[in-house]
Image (cartoon, rainbow, N blue to C red; front, side, top):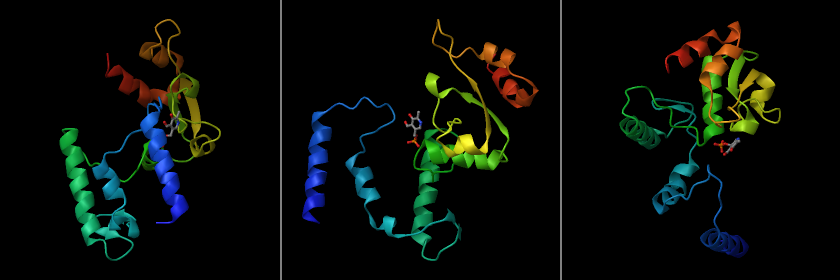
Length: 169
Ligand SMILES: Cc1ncc(COP(=O)(O)O)c(C=O)c1O
């Protein structure tokens, strides 16, 4: 490996071993995960889904993705289809928005300043450019989401959301 790159990897390894980063969504990957992420799988394009790829040579990748889907279904005790491709929250939310909405559609989401995600309509994020966001927050006293207040303050655009919230009653 390039000596300078090697030195920086070592420096970062020591930094991580000697500091506590309190960033909730960061993670310390196991050595198994890091080994998988630096395996020959990274050499391949694998757009599409198992059995429906845009490039040849994905037989083994298909096996891996199907295994990953099966493991996720077992983990979440579900028979629903599991999309295991997004590597983090942002592309996962993009996949959901693209599957369920048209550009310009309304989304009711949690305010970024009160616990929401950048993909909840921040103007610096693609979500804020393509969809019409409305926000809810938390009760200032309890710091919890008041679902009843969320339902009462919203309008007809959010009939679907209201139906979902009613399921929690
Ligand atoms: C507020 C907020 N927006 C966006 C992101 C990016 O999310 P991800 O890395 O899951 O795509 C994070 C990550 O934690 C976040 O805290």
